[in-house]
Image (tube, rainbow, N blue to C red; front, side, top):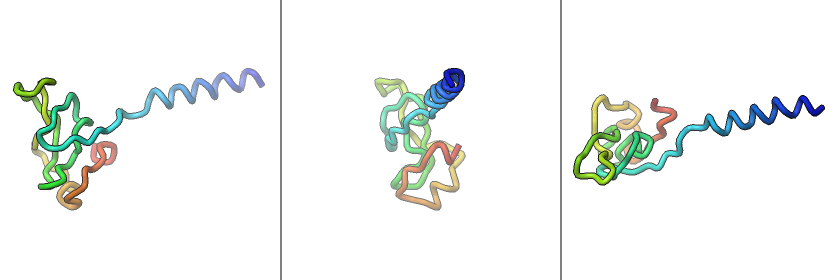
Length: 87
């Protein structure tokens, strides 16, 4: 029985470490560091958002509009979206 617990514990630890980054959901113009910091969709216009270079930001990046657009964003205006389903 002792040996059965070791693989189960190892599996649990690997699942915890493999979880995706938390999604913060910042909107258009917000400072960011990576794409998951921004909502994938702008809740106002429905445009797709990405974390892009911006020298005026403290982090050096800002959530801004960029093509290509996600069809989901235009079909679900007003919603932030989920990177895991749009990626």
